[in-house]
Image 1 (cartoon, rainbow over the protein chains, first blue to last red):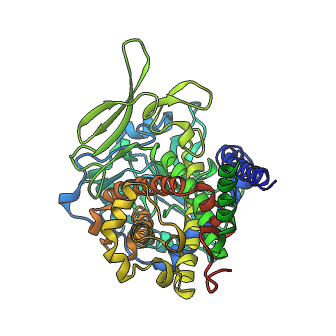
Image 2: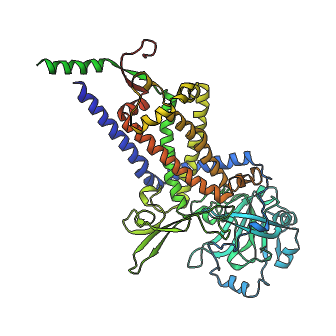
Image 3: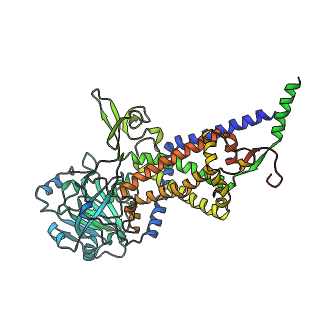
Length: 258
Length: 290
C-alpha cells in the first residue's frame, strides 16, 4: 500500500501549498484592515529611518541640479487653490496682510511679514521634488533658511519638532487643515527653506503661495504648502491625529525619506 | 503470465534502485521559502504603489519635456464604458480588463493600472501598499544577506553554484538538452547543470542586488549618500523604470524556474526543497548515500 500513501501525502502537500498561498494572498487584505498588522509592518519604517540616518549623515546635502534640468512647468499636486475665505482674501491683497507666526517652545515668539521674511539669510537651490506617488519634478527654490529663523526665535532646549500649520483645508467642508512636522536636525539643515520664490518668480498659489516648506531628502508631502504658523513642540501627540502630519494621520510614514 | 511478472519485477527493482539524496541544506530551504513569500508580496505591493502614478520615465525627473516611456491610463468611450489604455514608446494598446481598467474587489470596473488580483492590498491604497512593500523589503534584504553569508561560509557557492571547467564545456549540450526538456538523471542529477548555475548566479548577484539598488535610487534620503550617484543609472526616474523592469525580469525567471521544476519532476523537486531529499534513480554509491 505504498502508492496510496505517497499520493495522499502529495495531495496533502498540494493542499498545504494552496492554503499557504491563499493565506498570503487573500489574507493580506484582511490583515491590512486589522489594527495590529499595519503597525507591525510599520516597524519597517523605524528600521529604514535608523539605517538611513546611519548611512547618510544628518547634514548630508541633497543633490542639486542645473538650470538645464528644470522641469518646464513645476507640477502642482494636492491643493491648487485653498478652499478658504481667509486665505483667498489674503491672496487677493497679494499677501500684504500675511504674517508668519512662530511660537511654541521658543524664547522670542515672532510675527513676520513676507517682506521681513525676505530680509532673512536666504538660499537658492535647484532640487528634485519626489512625490510619494512616484513622480519627480525639478524646480529652483529661493527662500529663508529655517535655521536663521530659528536662531532669531531661540528654541527652548525641550523643543524637538517644528510643526507647520497651513491654510489649505483638506476636507470639502473647510476642515482638516493641512499640517506637517519635522525634527530639529532637519529644521537646521542648510537646505531646509521657507521658500517664497519658484523658478525666479514669486511662488504661485498652485505651488503653495506665499510660503512653502522645502525639506529636501524627504517626499513631497512633507513640503507643506500655504504655511501660516510654526510651532515648536516637544511631542506631536495630542495634535490632530497625533501622527505629526495630515497624511501621517491617514497612514503614511512620518519619516518620508523613502 | 511470465511477461507481466517480468514487468512487475522490473518496477520493483527500479524502486529499490533509487535512493534519496540530501540535496538542499536546511538554511537554503528556509531562506528559499522566505524569499518566495517576500518576493511575492514585494511584487504585488509594488504593483499597487506603481498604480498611484502609472507612468514610467527616463531621466532625472518625470517632467523633462519628453513623453513617458510607459503609461497606463483609462478613458470613457461614447457609451460611458471604461477603456483601459497602455502606451509604450508612443504605441497605444487597448488593455481593458487587465491594464488601465479592470474589475475591483466589488466587481465594478474602475480605473486602475493593474487588476486587483495582482495587487496587495486589493484596492488602490498607497499608504498600506508602502507598509507592505517597505516591511517585506527588509525581510528580503536581511534574508538575502544571510543567504550570501551562508553561501560563502558553507561553501554552497563554490561547491554548488560556481560553474566547473566541465560545466563550461557542456554549455552547448546543456542548451540543446533544455530545449528538448531532457534533464539529467542518476549521478548527474545531484548537481545543478551549467545553465541552472548561470541563471541562479545572475539572479543572486546581478538582478536582486540591482533591484535593491534601484529601490535605494528612489529614496530621496539615500540620494544624498553621494551627490549624483543616481545619475549613473540615468536619474531617479530612470531608476524607478529599471526597478519596474527588473521586477518583471524576476517574474520571468520565476516562471522559467517553476516550469523547469514541473517538467523535470515536480514532486521530487518540491520534496527536496521541503525535506532536503531528492530521489536519484540508480544504485547509491556508498560514499554519497546519506
